[in-house]
Length: 402
Image (cartoon, rainbow, N blue to C red; front, side, top):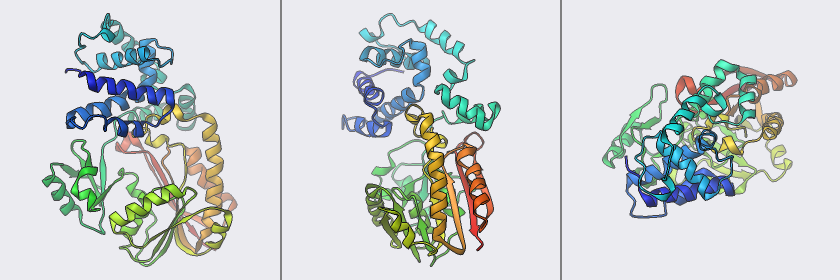
């Protein structure tokens, strides 16, 4: 396997932006892929995947390279050299690779496999938290699964098409997909591709949405004609799914504290043909009070640590801090307390996170039920990355009984 100069230099520049400027990896990758319009699919794949790999394995590569977390240009090259050697690339005759100790790199890699914080490339505090919450054995399996590259999963937009038609349309555009058992609207890409360039995407035939995430809206068991509130809608992936499940009948009120996210949802609703979604910015507690006791169903896709989605957001490992998790647990409790009041008696609430930590999931629900005896839990579901190969999620279905 050969390395090409312009691609490698793009990776080096991108890594400096992520590690030194604190930019988000997904945004940096988007920017990097626009650098040269002449790049083919293989070039773009190398750039995107290498950036994510270097972010994912930052601590491991840094330890092997001995660069002490200082990301000068020279040190980023040393980290890239570790990546290239471990991936089996033939090192070209460039000054940056002069005197590369390939045997030492491979030996150091083998040596570090006995220490989980290096083997799985995670901060000490995250490892300690994972062990405390899940136990040594379970955490080891989960973090190993969370270091694998995320697959691309699509959700068929049944307001526009059906799964068989979408599969054929994508195949006509050169994108092969397979169905996933147990996920009625999901298609998995056989090989990664830029699906956003397809006519199928422009026609609103699908959304990119992980298989686990596709379970959440369905868990609320909505019906056409209902009044549903999506309380932390963000850019609205689950609102769009709710709209499809409700066959565009009834009302979905998508709320969020960030107006910019809801603006993105408005664009997505037009493409998807979802006409029963209205957006509402939560500017004050008055907005929430006005909606009390009005909904047949409420979705609370709560803000969380995001530990369940590290596969697709590997830079979260380095951006997350222990204090954030402590604070988000308090925020989740507050959100569940306030937003659960929006549902009518006899109505349902789904509390969901993309975390695998019990403190953000079943323990939150348990604490809520202890102080809210007018609710009961019908069922809950944990999605394990190591058991399923998909993102880590939790969802609990609650019913208001009085």
